[in-house]
Length: 110
Image (cartoon, rainbow, N blue to C red; front, top):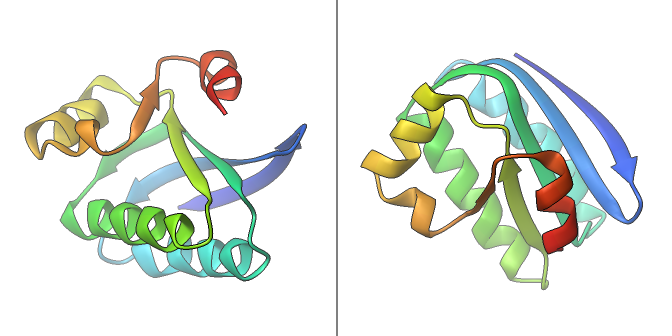
């Protein structure tokens, strides 16, 4: 699992790669902790290189979104593979998150 940060205007984009599971969720959480302390208001997670996410990874995403909402932040997701998108749909989390097919569309929604 790796996370690369980049800015697109006032949006912090996190390019995730690898699997988000019980072993790697703490690494994702650490990255988020830093951004939340800085109170980054707009974060876009790019899942293009994520092949799998388990329940602990989903729980981490929900936790981070809730923490961001406390200070008026917004979290969006983009480029989910069919497998990852299916997990969000099965768990009904697709209704909770703003999920976009492309980065361009997600950036326009902020």
